[in-house]
Length: 96
Ligand SMILES: [Zn+2]
Image (cartoon, rainbow, N blue to C red; front, side, top):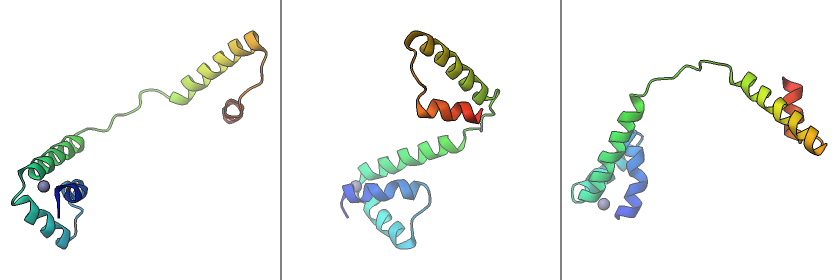
């Protein structure tokens, strides 16, 4: 397997998602290829950093802020252009 083909497997390898035969293929290639070994190390480092991230709690309800902004822009827009609502704006207003 060449480097280009193996790189498709390296991300899965970093996530421990390879089958036994795929893992054997990757390990055989890595024994002789420092470039792919470095790529795998990078993928593993990124995976470790991502897994160490904490969940963030939302401090406010984004829906209220978005709806207030839409209603404000609609008021301004209607006053200036006298045009109708876009379908998605109308739908959001119905849902609010
Ligand atoms: Zn390689």
